[in-house]
Image (tube, rainbow, N blue to C red; front, side, top):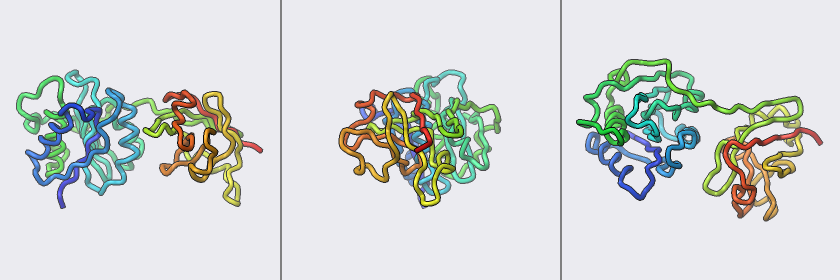
Length: 267
């Protein structure tokens, strides 16, 4: 079976950055299969990359190498790393990009990449995705053990991940992502609201408050909402999401990532 390598980056499609990364991978491992998760991460937005990777990585076969490069500190003292979990490998900068992977992993090793003979010759200061991370991902996918690339570390960088606050009759969370449809995704999950689910399966809460708007109850699907009115749903990733049917909720509600959202329990 061909080695599978995914690519998550802020390289976009206008320049040749993503193509150069893929070319390096294929020169080292012509049998590799490369799948783009996204090259449209907002420039230098480490959190968006972390969230996108978290939402996607587990849908790939075990053994997949996930290459992720959103790297504002390229050329500085930040470390290149390999993350090894029970099922996957991750290659990229030690800048918090893999924070949500650390949170998910049952077993975890992180290696500081120091074996420079796996890099391209004379790597430059501005394109480590091509010169360092792409060749390392390719050699890793060819079967080189992760320990060959460098020593294990424990002081890897983690982002400050917002956690919902659950009270007796409310849950307070934040907007953590807004997708291309304008759907507003929060860090409140079905697990958080499960204690308030009635025996008949209905949800015993009434109001979601976001950006000064109050939304009553949850919908089962998008089209259940009235056109022009915001609705809320538990999406396919298990997160509480605010949407507008056939409209862009971000634009209409003027919501940004990080805004507070409150779910109030009661009749």
